[in-house]
Length: 282
Image (tube, rainbow, N blue to C red):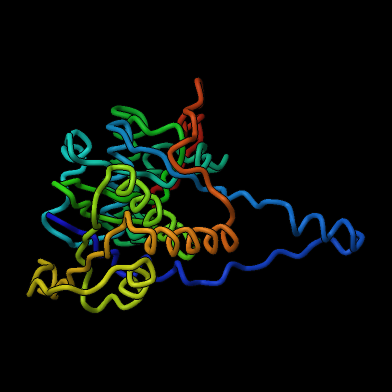
């Protein structure tokens, strides 16, 4: 099943980045030098692995609540013609203290105050934090994109983001990375489906050269909404590459430069642990 509709999660790619204020004590010269210094994006892109499955499935539940059937992520990670990319950053200290159960909960699950939800959180706290602790990746995953390569086409099957990580340019960063990998794979074009009502995502896709080429009627199982089929012009062409490089430059200027598929895995960097901290399950 293809789920490239991001449920408006990519609309945040158009949000303005809040500008930081330089210390007033800095001289004009120092301020000028700082403004010219390359800004580093805290998020980077790496290949997703089977060790990431639990986190990816959690993000999928959060990004696509009520969607059935869900993507079989663990199976897709083993596909010879598949590639999943993850947008990652370092774990925050407070995230380490809260433990794995909290890390893989969706925002809706955390916010639900119903009796059933509170009971479930208490049960999960016991089993996931103490009995059967899930194996989490060494870094925090904010979102991911899945690709299938079929003949001369690359197909984006899913893009998902955590609610807390939207409006930070991450969705656009994942799209850029997917297109780069399609180029590396010698794909001729990239295709996807998106909800007909998701104007923000459609605008972003158009920005990166996708055109509407068809409609899948009643494609989405949750509400029977139509899916718009979109495809790029040939991505290997000089015209496309020139425009693509300009868009990457604009993204870097707005959100900061990010490493994509070139970040080495630390030799010893723990995933979040409970460290004896308790979390209120109510």
